[in-house]
Image (cartoon, rainbow, N blue to C red; front, side, top):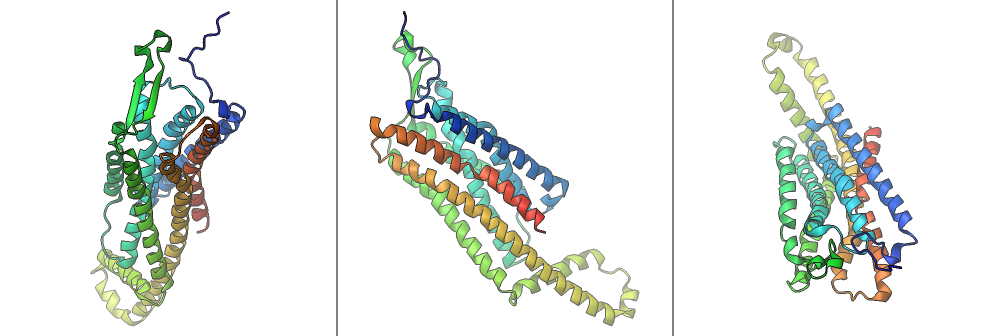
Length: 337
């Protein structure tokens, strides 16, 4: 009888053998819900031509990042978290950490861009806004640049080179000798604390601007709408306008001010939902980001490795939960009009 274990085939981690069906169900539910919901969000924005507004263009960018997470990142990540032996080759060893973090960085930067763009708009509604496509492209390029050093801190050892029995099996591990702790802490600050901290600050500033209804915002919205209207209708029916100038001016002023009030209400509603999206994203990311930093300081032993595997798998699921909550909040936002 041959008791040799074939290490070229996947073997479940001992710690998850009894509960892995639960993880498979949770991840499958998140992938299905996230992909379908984000596709529906993109379809809704395009169908209703909401992409003319910069904010909705940024939401499309987030939806694309969420779809990448659902289609590629989550299934591969779950497989690697559940399987004990590394049978995925050197390419995935180096590329998967980059693939996992690029869409997360894009989502973080997109939330920062939304906050920055809306803060500029509320501060001066008549000021031209930077095209969202340019900023969205920049978020992907920045996300890629942030993960380029990852292969430096990753080591892959092909065991098949040493023994034939280990053909197709390797060891994929973090290189602990190249100042990985300092790099991880710096990354934690650069891609999580700093951008989300600035995002929170901008949302607080916008809240103060929107609360001050007696301040300049309604007037600026009104002046902006008048400027846009006058550009398209300047010089038309000058004679008729002079004949009824008094009544027409009174009515147009009242309608313009009423429209400004409606714009402020709309901006408040938009601000509430976007703030909720950003808050949920930050909260869901927090456990995984902290665990990544703490992991390097923890000594993993046989006794605690099982608890660590389960905790890490759950924290990854929580970190990607915004792939479903963001389109759900978008749907609630649209229905609240």
